[in-house]
Image (cartoon, rainbow, N blue to C red; front, side, top):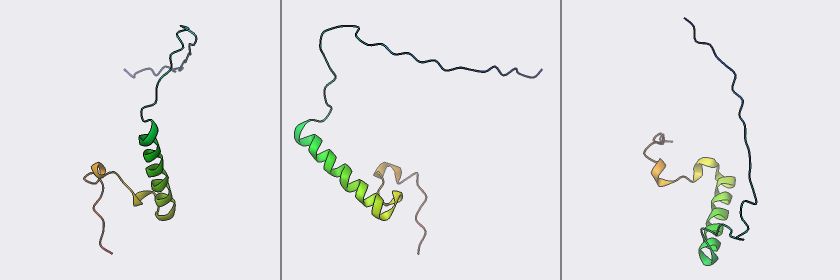
Length: 71
């Protein structure tokens, strides 16, 4: 017996204004930490633009990546 495939429709909804406490989510990094992270991100972007997407990677990904081939 062959399985019958039924179409699926994704539905979404949003809500707002459930309370009027005036609370908002705070920043994860604020002040000096936020500025440092922004600078690191900007340098990483420039390196990737100049040398390609594989020029800069996280150390945790090194074991999973292919070993570099000798030139």
